[in-house]
Image 1 (tube, helix red, strand yellow):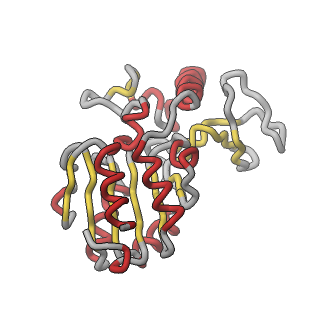
Image 2 (cartoon, rainbow, N blue to C red):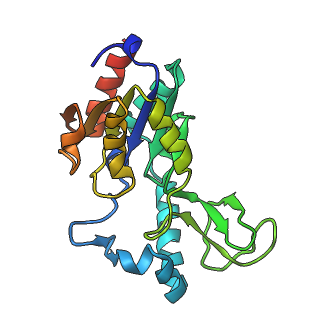
Length: 235
């Protein structure tokens, strides 16, 4: 991988593999379960209509759990890159935790929402939120009791896609870290970036489903391969 001078604009996609070493479970198992729940029961709009208490309990537990986790060396390395990179840089994360920000990264876009926010479906306000939602607390602005987790569920559109595609169009380098390559539209970013002329790099525990689209793949735990790569780029 070339030094800083060869690239100016970088887009980084991060997935569950970045936070796994901080103790945050990956999205779901091969059997389709997410912490022993069927995805269809806790991660769709239909599930929320059918059994809102179950969905709220599930996300209340996850919201509490992530606040006890700490960033790992992969988060720290990306935060250092963010701080020192003088070109354009965007960290697009599929993760709904706040570990990138707690490590110090600022140029972060959460395409799947954030656990530590609540969305009022009445007034469309998204508010910082660290406590539970199952008691149906009122919206801080409109007072309606229509708050839900600000997390993108299956069947919903990811956030800020226009910004993401604009960044991909101007990227010289696209890096995917800790992703399975199974969930679209994020899984298609590497193909988009490569067809637009960007160099593509995969840093992953194992090859992803879209591995063939990367010019280079480096395999290993994110806490090991990401700091090494960042050090090379900033050398």
